[in-house]
Amino acid sequence: MGKKVNTKDFVKKIEHITRQRIAKSKVVSLKEYKKLQSRKKTPTLLIIEDDETMRKSFKRLFEEEGYHVITAADGTQLSSLADNTELDLILLDVGLPWINGFELAQLMKEHDDLKDIPLIFVSGRTDPEDLKRGFAVGADDYIKKPFDLEKIKKSVRVLLELNNSI
Image (tube, rainbow, N blue to C red; front, side):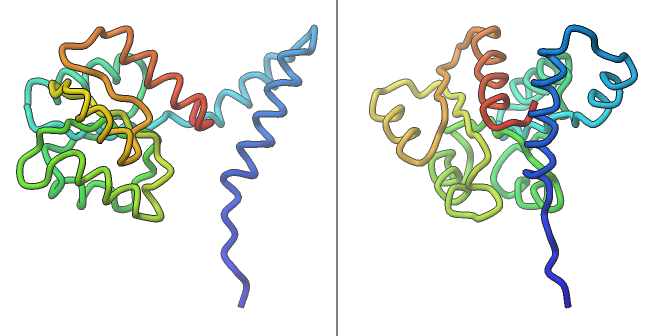
């Protein structure tokens, strides 16, 4: 019986090298360019935020940026959403009901399928100890509320690029 092979990373590397070489080329075939662009997938963001207005605002903001957005109000909703969904980045509020964002992040970073997904905390909790704790549990960024829209969009874009999701 053969072993199931995951070629996702392999294909991403090939496409990355191809893009680099096309970019260096003086003349690029429109057909080649369209073919390469059609293979690019839309990154999927998971936003876990208990405040409905904030959740909807994030969803609208990032959908306008061209991302696929899934939202959850808390950790219990996350369990049903994460199954069979390929996530590229998680934005997580700290002040969630039942299980806070720090605890949830710790659980994610201990899970084989979630541990390598970039994580950004977005929180009104701005005490230096909260920031330290956020990074200690595996956050890639910690953005304080109220936040600058351009800053959060840039952080998402940079982390997706670093993770080869865009």
